Image 1 (spheres, chains in turn purple, green):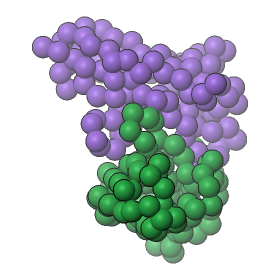
Image 2 (tube, chains in turn yellow, blue; image 1 turned 120 degrees about the horizontal axis):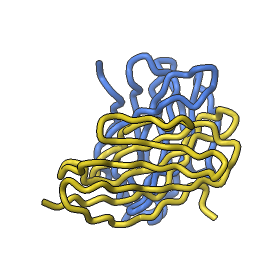
Image 3 (spheres, one colour; image 1 turned 135 degrees about the vertical axis):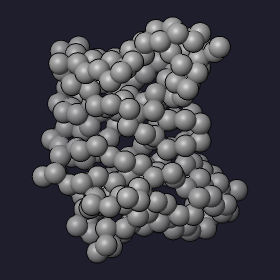
Image 4 (cartoon, chains in turn yellow, orange; image 1 turned 180 degrees about the vertical axis):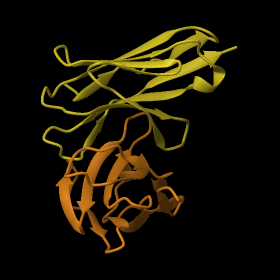
Length: 111
Length: 115
């Protein structure tokens, strides 16, 4: 079983749609959680950190369920510029500094 | 404020050769991590350097080695290159906050092709 699992997609949605990505992780001792965005042939860029209380940044909402070891990302009112690969990322246990990435979920927003 | 920089941008090598990739961390960051990203996959952790020492290592063979310099910049060396080493190599920097997994910022990467 992979340490971090994501549906690779692709998700093809029209502009203005709401889309949700999910991710599960295997290590219950993990202590930090992130969503990164990666454009084609570019480096990953931090989209947002994820907290148990949930957090929102404009059109983006992230949620963490520690009991189910499940992380989600919701994008509302999708824009063409949201087209990218979204990487679910889990920090190692015991504050080790290692990041564990999922395979990534590809989103294509169409006009 | 310069972000993470990496050199070279692209590199083509043949099997059996050796390669050195370089990384300069973001200003104020003292921890450098290296990742390998194969096509269609998420990045995989190679190792992390702090205070010029390898602090943690992922599941990569000894052919992968690194170094951190007093100015916090870092090198990744790969010996005896294999075709499967072809990938995007990403460097990430972060401040060391008592060893915690703080947010890591990535450089643009070096795309290595092994023929």
